[in-house]
Length: 598
Ligand code: ASP
Image (cartoon, rainbow, N blue to C red):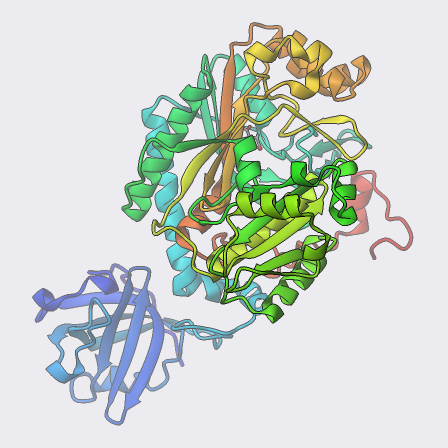
C-alpha cells in the first residue's frame, strides 16, 4: 500500500484519553494498528499509542476513501487518523478499556509506515519462547509487561532522585573505563590502543571512586550507576546491572540506615502507593543464620530451624556425630501439621536436596497420629537424644522433621531453601505483603576453604570501633560494620562504614594476605587518599534491577531490563558479542590464538 506524506504530525489527544465528554469533537490520533476486525461493511481498528488503546471505525458511508484503504491495514502499521469521537451503542461498550465507551469515526487516514508481521501477538498473552522475544525485542517492548515494568522503573528513578536530591546528595558520574578492583567477581577488560598490552577494567561497582569523591569533599554522593561483573548468569544476575550507589561522610551505621529507610519508604509510596511500616526491623546476622539458615530471610514464613549440634556431639549415631566431629553442625527444620506431605513428597525433597542443593542426604522423622516416630534413623537415637529433639522441635503428631548434619554453610543452605519452598507450598506465610528488614552485625572476616581469613563483603569495610584492638590478636572475632537491606527474602543491597584510617586499612589488607608491594600497586591511590584527610564515611548500593523486579513482579531480571543478555551472555537483538576484523585487533595490539575464536 502506498505511504502517505507525513504532513502535520501533531496529535490532538493521546489514544487513551478519549471519554464520553469528547463525543462530537474532531480529534487527531496516531499510533500502531493493534488489531483489525473486518465486520462486513465496517472495519474496526484498535489503535495503540504509548498511552493505551482507542477503537477507530472506518465506515464506507462516512469516508469511502479511507474505508477502502483500511482493508489493507495490518498489525503494527503506523497510521494517523482524523475523525470524530462518537458514543458507542450500549451493546458494544467495552468495559475492559478506559476508552471503551467511545470510538473515533474516521474522516481521514494517513498511512505513515507499513510493518513486517509481528513474530508474536502484541496483545494478550504470548507463549513465544524467551529467545524469540529477545531477538525481536522491539515487539516485546511494545507488549504490556515490558511497558509496565520500564515505566515502573522510571517512576522509581524519579522517586530515588527526588529523595536523595532532597537530602542533599549530589549526583556524580564515575568512569566506565576504570581499573580492576577486588569485588569478588571477574572483570570485563578493555584493551588500550594507546598503551598496548594494558587494559582498563569496567567497574564492578564505583566503590573506590565514591570513597574518593567523599574524601574529595562531596559529603553526600549518589549515582544510578552501571556496573559490570563477568559472572555466570542466573535469573537474578546479569553481566551489566544498575546500582543506586550512595556514600556519605561523617556518619555512623544508624545515620546510613535512616537514609536507606527513608529512600525505601518513599519509593514504595511513590511507585506502588504502599506505606511500609517503620522503623524497619534489624536482625543480627547470627540470629538470621541460626533461625533461618540464610542472611536474607523472608521472615513471613512461619517455619524456623532448630539447632541440635550439641545434642549429637558424642552421640552413638555415627552419621550425625561425625559431621559434628568434622566441625559441622546438626540442624532441623520442623514442620508441624505436615500431613499434606506424602512419603513420595519427602523422597522428592531428598532427591532435590541432593541433586540441586548439594546435600549429602536428607534425614527425616515423621510423627504419626499415635505419637510414634517413623523414620529409618530413629533407631539410632538414644532415649535422651529422642527426648531433647522432641523438646527443641516441639514434635507432635503430624510433625515432619527434616535434618541436615554437614558443614555449616551447606546444612544452612539446604534447610533455608527447603524452608522457603515448603513455606510457600504449604501456605505458611504471615498475611502481610512486604517483609523489609536490615540484617546487621556481620563478622568482618570469614574462614575460606583453605582455612585462611577472607572478607565477608569487601576489603574496605570498617571494623566496629570497639573491636579495632582485636585486629592484632584475634581478627576472626572482629565485627564488621556491614549491613544488608532485605525485602521478602531478596537482598536489595549492601553497605558498610569504610576504613578512613590508612593504618586500619593496611592492617586489614595484610590480614587478607596482601604483601606491602601488592597493596601499594593495587590500592596505592586509595591509601594515599585516606592519608589526605579522609573523613569517616560509609554508604550503600541497591541492586536496582532487583528492586524493580521485586516491585514489578516477574520471573527474571530480563523482565525489567530493556535490552538484557541471555543466560549465555548474548544480546540476541544486537548479536553481541560479535566478530571484529583483523585490523581492529592489530590496532589494539591483539592477536587471535589458534583454536580460539574465528
Ligand atoms: N560497592 C558495594 C557493592 O557493590 C556496595 C557498598 O558497600 O556500597 O556491593
